[in-house]
Length: 54
Image (cartoon, rainbow, N blue to C red; front, side):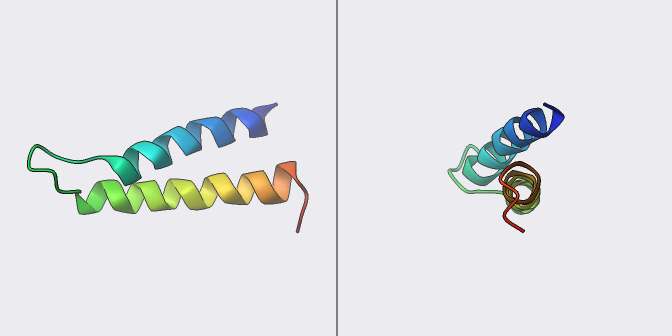
């Protein structure tokens, strides 16, 4: 159950980090960095711990 919660939370963080734009319409490096890191953790837990693919 904790794995599902972790995947949902990290997916939300990844989505926000990768789609965030400032007032000028540009993306910030820090948001992109942490969004990419959150996406990696999300996919790792989803594929390895939930789907047991690896």
